Image (tube, rainbow, N blue to C red; front, top):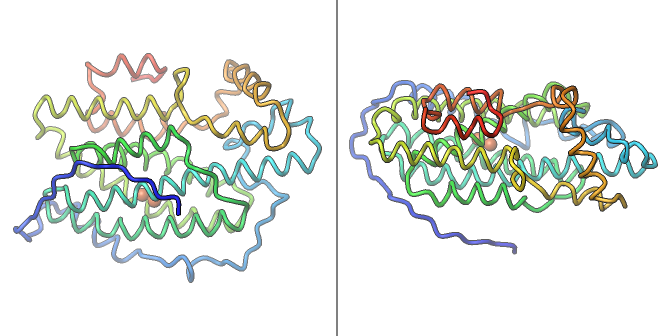
Amino acid sequence: MPVEDIVTQLTTHWQFDYEPKVKALRDLYEVAKREQWNVETDIDWTLEIDKDGDILAQEQDPTREFDVVLALPDDKRQQLAISNAAWILSQFLHGEQGALLCCGQLIESVPDIDGKLYAATQVVDEARHVEVFHKYIRRLHKVYPIDPTLQAVLNQILEADMWQMKCVGMQVIVEGLAMGAFKIMKEQSNDELLRNVVELTAQDEARHVSYGLIYMKDEIPRMSDPDRDRVEDFAYTAVEALSGRKPGTGMTTQTDLFGEVGLDVAAVAAEMIEKLQDPEFQARQPDAFRDYVMPQLTRLGIITERTAPKYRELGFQV
Ligand SMILES: [Fe+2]
Ligand SMILES: [Fe+2]
């Protein structure tokens, strides 16, 4: 079995004051208990995936309009669309496992009883998400390996020695990205089964983002200046790596798929660079960082005078 080990630094807190303290987290815990669902019985698995239809929206698979892709014969173009969808969903599957592992850590490392109880419900949510994406991807095509950039960021979150880093990295940044992507899939995928999957998943993810926001809104002002600086820098590092706005960053293994259908990967990359300089093309691309991650980081006060210039260098308006 392909097991990989990392060594993490985690301080485990017992909390012997069992009285509810953070009402908003308790309320979220109650909602989470009520809104559990079952992958086997709450999704209609009799629905067939229409592999000739568009699994992902055009916005989530922009290479579909590339000249080199349009020049492919129909069967190859369809094969590429399916492998692209499977690759993207595989990254979500691995991200879900990362979230599962991180939440287990949050149970141990957050100080409040309300935070521990809520995180326990999220562990079950993330287990369900691992299950549901794996089941869907197996029907669609195959599971692709985790992209090294995504894995590096998830490892940094799991290895972090402060629970606040885990909370910002996972609950605000990674979950925020997932929310953005699931929203587009839910609204625009032509595949009814995938729409069912992401509709239920996105309901859970909305709670997960809320947990990060509720918890960190109280926590950030309580932190010492050096600790807050570390969390701010940690957030920037994750955004820089995943947003791919600097040369040599972002996820890179998706381009291998073009080689699978006999395309010259360098030619596809060249067309990508050309397209990225076209403002019309850019405007049509969804940007989960701009729409979901940056507003939350700003609201939490994690983007400060000290770190804002670095975000501006990446092209964000902060
Ligand atoms: Fe999830
Ligand atoms: Fe989540």
